[in-house]
Image 1 (spheres, each protein chain N blue to C red):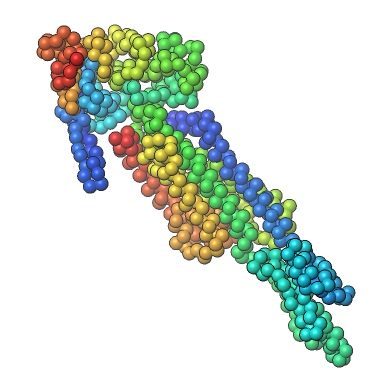
Image 2: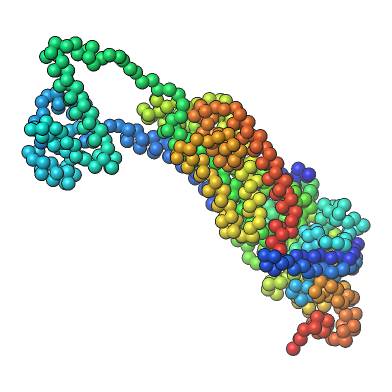
Length: 383
Length: 250
């Protein structure tokens, strides 16, 4: 193979891509979306996780103990004389629920829509308030009967300690971020591959290129490497922005204090290797798919399937399906999963090895295929 | 010398999901072309002219037969042969997002013209085709005439011995066509060999030393324009063409 021809082809392809605004935008848009998504999601989650106080209607008078318990339970009581008035207030959305106290039967009835998120919280908070008040009354009774309240209530102690492992919030942030990184490789690679193959045919420049003293294998390798370079650039921009955004977000948002993630030199190096592997494979696949197309439109529609595959790992992680080792053999999906594993401390050397070795095999197959494909007159001329 | 020996090119088309049809675009074509000759390849649409010229230019491979240039054949010396050929067709287009200068430079690099020589050659070609004023403009912004001049200029960058021109004047106005025809005549004077396909019979009659008429993939007549007219007992090549192909020139 003539290195000179390959280098000229790489330069030619990169130059055309640098002068094409559409591809440049694709190269940058997806990575730029990553920090925006991380900060927005962190902000939304933190705001959501702050406990809200709900207005609740009651038709009985409160003592000081009840008032303080209600406050502790995030409930703000509003007094109404009758059940009818409470119903009206609920309908007018002045309160999120109401408690009807029957003095004769000494019963409390909670009214709220438990199917709604608000009703679910109100129901839990009111239950907690009544439970707590019930305990308070029980303690008063026991004290009156001269019984040791501590012995009756505090038979044992318990604590909750947060263990490391899967973290739902981090999993969502990572799955979206890393899906975006792989998607940015898919989009830039397919764009670049489309321009290097289908657009060359559509514009009639491929015939010019074929007249040069260059082997078709040198041409396609040049085109492939140019696609790989753009894919690597896009993914590394994405990776840097993801890591940077998570480090900054962890300083800004409280929620990150309870989340453990792993950003260090080892994980970053493995992350970079994963991105390079992904670019090598996805670029080859993009060239293989777009080479059959005769026009830009045809190439874009046939390469859409790659974008769809990229979303699968995100869906799997959001649904919470447990994955097996075989999953790491599925190209494209495995890169997203591996990046998530590495940075969320699910470090498994076997999975890393599976992804890297399978990538090498897939890349060799795909390069062999595109070289053969570019010798075919059907692919070159569509005849 | 360019030698085409028993060239056959078979294509297979899918008729439907189960059936395919095979046909020969070129069937046993042989001829020679010497330095300083202009060979006109004529024939109706679908006769196999483009396929033949693409095979000669090394863009396509024949199913059987061989093309050799200066005793070298494509099977063993494809790269060396391509360095001696320049190919220009109505279908070959230029990269629109680069300038004529960048295009010439890129072509020269592909042909491995040494850097120093490349610069002086680009300078000469730019002067010859009057490209100075727009050499750094994007090709997409050039007029048809300017575009045509750049198309020819890029063929000269490696100083080829053989030119393969496939309907290079089709769709062009008189002025743009003349640029190409003048270029062909100039190159013949330089001792270059030119294979030239066209639909314009008058054009071919005026500039070609030898004519090869093809129909349905086979050579149906060959010789100088005079010889062909004599063979067909006609007064011009246009009538000869219709007589040979079997059409009506009314």
